[in-house]
Image (cartoon, rainbow, N blue to C red; front, side, top):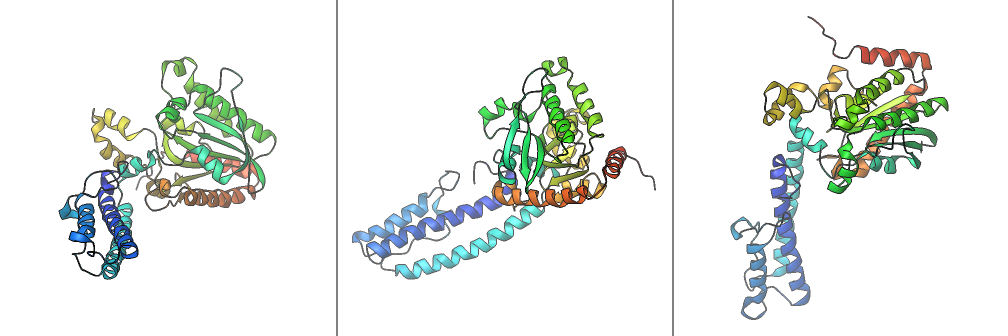
Length: 375
């Protein structure tokens, strides 16, 4: 099993390992048939011994040793026709490929909310700058809030989207530990939110639509952030964004937690990737409060109704954007193409509306969140 695989992906990884074992055997058989004649023709059955050794001690994709009893197909006996064996293994591989496709569909169609949270946190999942590179052209980043400093956890700037100039704002995580430390794991300081507001206001001044990509476990809760009034920065952003006259399209691409998300999350259309999550608190935080133990995070994730499917049903978001099977990290370009198509559709719709109508609808959509309906 791949070292980056989740527990629920184990059935998939096992079939992938079986296919890899067959591929190794096919490679060796091909070499024997094309180079040294039929398998088993070498002295003392050396070719067969080599193939058996591979099957008995082959390594899986995770690097662990595969015992002989788990090998899919035994190496051919000395004297057996190598071409026939290659054909047999090829058919076995096709059968496993069909089984793999069905298993993938069954596993990913039946994901629990907690499992989707895990996918949203995958290290290889594309982040804001990845989507900017794949969706936008002529990206120019803006740094600093003109009050304190620059915040690498919040990226802001201007680009072209399908030929029209737009502003882009989003939280940025790292692809590895070093980058995550530099980006503060996507948790913005108050200067990050003030930088975002600076760019949002500039876009409004010049009539440029705003695209916002949300991916954060929350605003940074450290002492420095509190000293520089992170709560005030988030509240001010919310207040100011309700008055921005240009269209604002929000896309939740990964994690969308608490005020850290809503601090740049006020817009006219709220879209969400299929395996992203969006709620008032992380599952671990909720579990720590309600059960006094973070190990109840799976139960908290279920109760929070944080998935795209749940939020679409509740009217919190406007569209759940499909991802490649297994998550956006499995096929980044396909995920980006889906995000681009969704942004394009909603941006065209919003640009056809008068600004006054957009502003009223924007206020009403957030005003009704958390409303109790009896009956």
